[in-house]
Length: 187
Image (cartoon, rainbow, N blue to C red; front, top):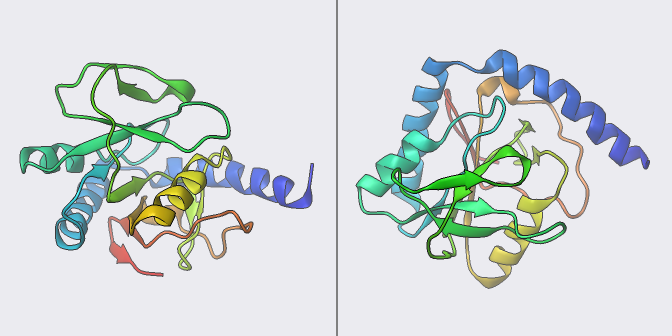
């Protein structure tokens, strides 16, 4: 195990505990309002959300509001280890099935290339870096999408998930903004 791998594993363990302690319904509602305002102001294309797992902050309220306003919304689908994510169309009425790692995914639907991504995370810092679960799926995906066109990557979290410095590697992709219940953080 490399030093960076060990550092990230140790940091993940602490971040899980901080996220669990930070979670709360009022905070989630406030964060959702900030997220919707940012997405409505800064992008007009399709938005990729996610289906929460564990103690993640839930973006479904924002996703449903975007769908109700006529915006295309999609969710990530893991297509294989070491591969970028693909995104399948989602609505609140979509039939969902179990996907890898416990996340629900649409059973059917068109594949969409998003203009903006709501990105889950364990921890973040003010430089725009995030700590994920260690699979590298979002880093590979953002690298691929950004090579083709501009894309807005928005971390969605509770304020208590902030840490001083996230351990990073050259493959880690920076977020364009982080949204919490306290507002929008710009790196």
